[in-house]
Length: 157
Image 1 (cartoon, rainbow, N blue to C red):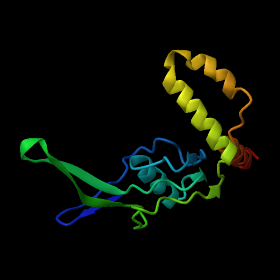
Image 2 (image 1 turned 60 degrees about the horizontal axis):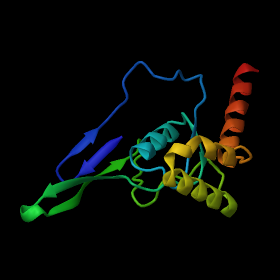
Image 3 (image 1 turned 90 degrees about the horizontal axis):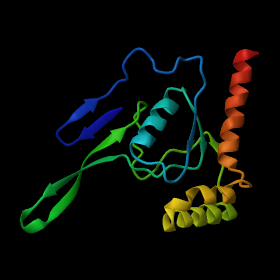
């Protein structure tokens, strides 16, 4: 990953040994809330053909921002650099398109919003809300697991 700003240019490379051996498949599940470091991680593995990305297009936050304090309690946030993936693409404002797109239906989005609201209202009852999820099928996760299973079958013959 490269970080390019007006005055600086840094290159970051992963260290050996590789954390996940190359023969083990990786599937990354993303959506529109996937941003920043998660996008850089996803984009890097995708660029190296090391992972299959499933879900929805990511948010598109590929910039470095610094907050500078000013007198009288004010502050200003400035974009000082941009992240570039290994193949040279800047994801800022664009996001990362998944290899396999699986969009949430309107019904799914409404259900998840409702669940999130209920959990915020009363976090102590989070286990009770689990009952709401029992019949819910996460199509994105289901597809990611199918892709992973297929890759494992290919490896194991």
